[in-house]
Image 1 (cartoon, rainbow, N blue to C red):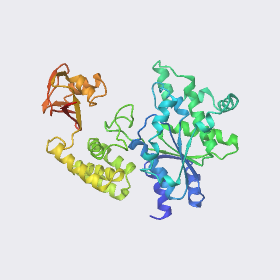
Image 2 (tube, helix red, strand yellow):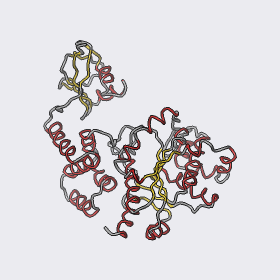
Image 3 (cartoon, one colour):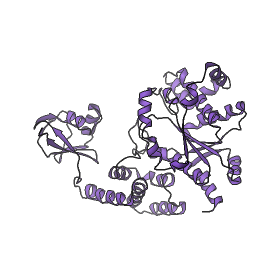
Image 4 (cartoon, helix red, strand yellow):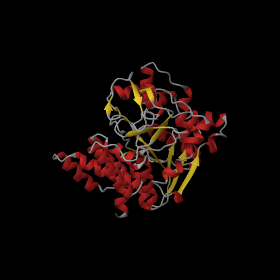
Length: 400
């Protein structure tokens, strides 16, 4: 692919908007190295495929020779980004932030060349910002502007509180671009208001307003909501190969083309062929399997993708249990609450989650479907407990 084609794909594939397209295209064609910024608040220790849409766009800039800045919002995470939130996000403690940041470098290394990435933390400047500078930032925005945000309008209409500290978030994110002297910022469509704030602030610091690329948000495994840890519909970068493959095979058919476009390097012409074939009546499952194999290969290896494909066929098409089921030790055999057992083995996050799984017909104990959450089960060593399509545990007696 020649440079002109690379720039065109950079500015179009998986992209919703470019601000300002004409200016950014001119800068890219000039070959002048640009400072390209992507910021992520460490609200979770795990990154998921939704994050990679912008990360992969960052990689395209990297391959064109631009300076990449991955910004960890360790200070702004203490406020909580209100974007796309119908209630205030719980601010994180310094301890939680530190814990969540630990694994970021290895995870973004699955997408970016880390030797050519500058990693920064916005506590470097925000922790020392005084009230005078904060007031100065605030003076460049009106309350009216802030209240125009869709999620703020929804909150007020529904009678939910809108907190003053949430109004400060876009100001601080905008100032990040000043501190980094950013030329370009990437973000999802839910970040549009925040990334535009920098364009208001930068001229006050004698900087040219940054250009902006907003990328598509992808729905998670439920096919309805944005991929999000809080919703529980993520496919994580550090998922085991078989788990990643299984999750990808569970997505609705309607997401196949969108995932291929935003999450893979498959040529667009080839993706169009897949789309036309499915529209003509071909079974989407074959293309979903191709997608799952491609992404497991990308984040693990060819061997891992092949093994995950075989295991999926054996377990879900052959209706057999996996070969390497994790074990959970119990003190002795006996009768136990199925709800408690699901929680203790980690197959359910909580008792309410366990009850929901049972009532939905997603729980089997020793190959028997159970739909009564009040039921007690007679547990003996070697019995297998399944929750959902992919989670299994073999119960064994602790001999100690």
